[in-house]
Figure 1 (tube, helix red, strand yellow):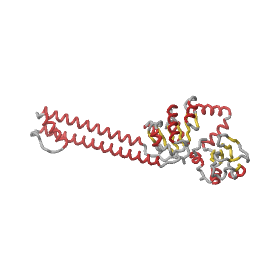
Figure 2 (cartoon, helix red, strand yellow):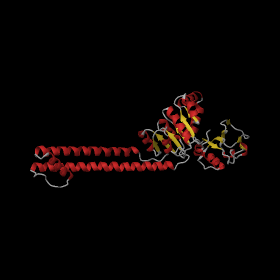
Figure 3 (tube, helix red, strand yellow):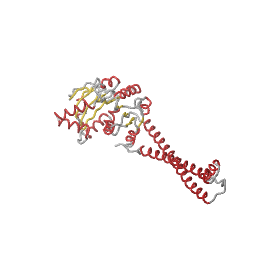
Figure 4 (tube, one colour):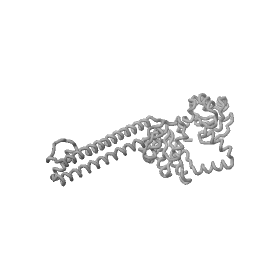
Length: 360
């Protein structure tokens, strides 16, 4: 679970309320000055300048005295002007101070959030906080640091309310991606409504960080090859994947249910993990049988070689070359033993996999 934060929506509402108070207070002051001036000019027969001067002194409580002697009616009007005028002035000043205070807090919050982003390395940048983007954030491992880029301030507020740092702006702009720390990021996930915007975002991100692993959503089949040419490592078409899953449930429901539970649900103890074999690994250059992987209890489902080819159900003679990836399944304690065996930290497998910037 991500740490909740104070929603910016409430601060924005208070700023708008403060501005409303300022406008209302100024309007009341203007009405008081106009009506008071008209009264002294027309009813008390002051000159227009004397009437305006008298009202200004009365409302501001300067205390220069009376321009002309007051009768009882004029004194009552002056009392009303002082009470209403001073009240409106105080009401206006309260709105001004509230707006200034909330604006300062908002700027401080933005600077603090930007410093938090600037301290991130190997994080995930998610472009687009729509329905799909929110589900992606929920499914990502809690060990991963995440930054959201969203063009709509109203939509960005919902992400900020969950404690996720947000950069408000157009993801196709280099400056916006730079604010999200794209040069230091490990993974970019593009989930935008427009495929043309997605392509522009990918082109910019690939230039800013050539080692970045990019995953993008394609809204139409014709955009998939374009996204690949732009530099996307993994293209996901929700319509195509949805059709595949519907077909799987229609033909092999038990298999589809099992894969769902293991990969996403968490109802079973077992889960999938992937491990990169770096050149410094004790496994590098050895066959599967020469390692102690089997002793951990995990099931090695496949090996993805450096060229992208999969070796499914590998035997003991299968060699683990540097750059290859192990696809395994096991219970948390078994995964922990494998983490310890390969020198990693128990429970950090997914985070390590996400930080691997080698395009797969």
